[in-house]
Image (cartoon, rainbow, N blue to C red; front, side):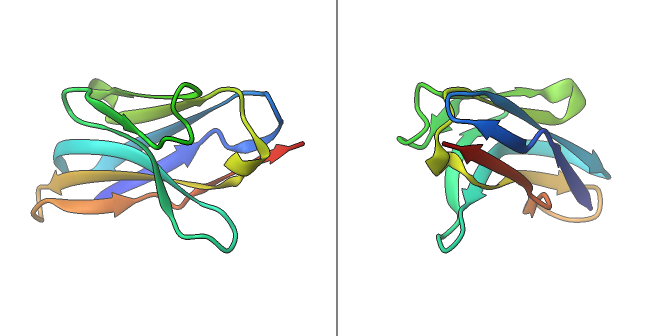
Length: 120
């Protein structure tokens, strides 16, 4: 199986920055896309950004120009640099990946989530 461990969440004032990290571990055979979703209270989970194994990126319109996703394939790690944070960015941020383990076929995996709170 594949495990995802996130770090880097916290409390920040509006206009500030945070950097989230997510490392994949376990019996990994291959990793395809990696990304971040978020879920605010009372709202559905939504895509924030994702990045393919060849580093093609995709962003939600609400974060374009403020957030940057990147990955280190050697470390099986994905990052989300969040700048110019707004109160509406407050949510639990979940790391996700599409990966193949030595024991199973391609599947989507999720991290446990990390809280990001932006105060006004």
